[in-house]
Length: 190
Image (tube, rainbow, N blue to C red; front, side, top):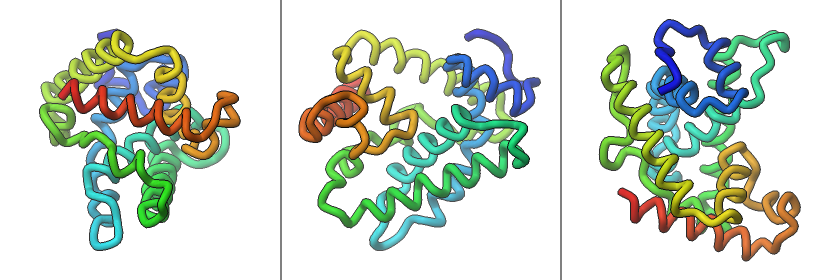
């Protein structure tokens, strides 16, 4: 772990995330997991993805918020993160009924195993989350092909499934297949 982030402000954590510090994102995730889960439960219901899928989308929204946040733009990080999380989940709900949602429906549950504990103010749970994420990152590095890593990195940074082919110079089917293989490998790691 690159440091004890409990005393860091949101702005300091965001700066570290923007610098590529995965441990800082784990700390930020632990800090905002309650918000992600609360928004996921508001969207859940008939005609919507499962809460686990919405939670995953919300964490992707949180990552996107951390990666793109500009403190000089006027809004505070909690407000900006809330909007990014909401928008990501709303997009997932809209896509849920479409025929192009194969990757969303096959997503790995983030609530499985020890992945996401109800951390609240529990520093021990936050450390467990950070350790789990570090282990997952190592396993992914070892098992994913270079193409799968590129596709996953773009997808996690907020690039939509339909945007991937243009960014990578590949067909939609190649990108979808790479995402599918990543999800299968993630499931095998659980």
